[in-house]
Length: 283
Image 1: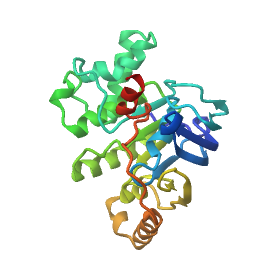
Image 2: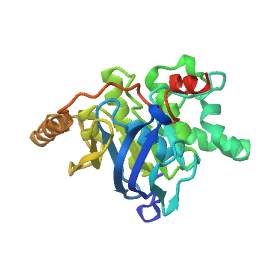
Image 3: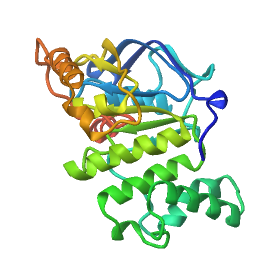
Image 4: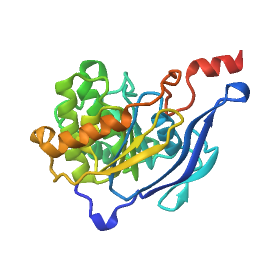
């Protein structure tokens, strides 16, 4: 299932993007003047403190949050709303609890009208790719947190998205499982080579996974520095103790240390504003 590099899609261009959330006196600028160019098949991380607009920016990439100004395109086409070619993986899984692993992974193809035999064959291939062969008939409640996230990744990949958007997908996992999932994700990405935009506030995770890191400022979120990582792939556990890894980690810590401390914000979902804001609006 290795993708030919020459056929890669998923080039992302963000040009002077500004995102304002809320209305009237409660409106605030979440993202300010962000410009990025992401090559097809590239693995990039957005690294920043909580409340800096990382998830808001991911929501705009997903098509759930409209741009206040500026633009986002994928392969030259402007984003105008959600689309299966931009798959989302959240920190908490979104699997159907009443469906088996096989049915969850195959669901996207079912919605596209793909015949049962074909969609289940493709689902089994991806289930094997994420290391869950033999668990096809299990239900989400019978799986560990790491296993559920593997199913989530397979579910998103089955429709061959141009871009996979990952919002701190391993944040709720224990340290050992998190490290295992990082290795698994890199192995899957090396075979599929879809473009990945990965949100994290964990410096080690960003340095271990990414081709490039875009470090964001506290709110309103701006790109304060781009770091290109030249570590060889495949990457092993020994990387995190290397002198260059340690140097870059110190540099990231310096970048993330804010000079001021703005009022904390509720963590924003890529699907839009916090639920309490919606409740106030409809009250």
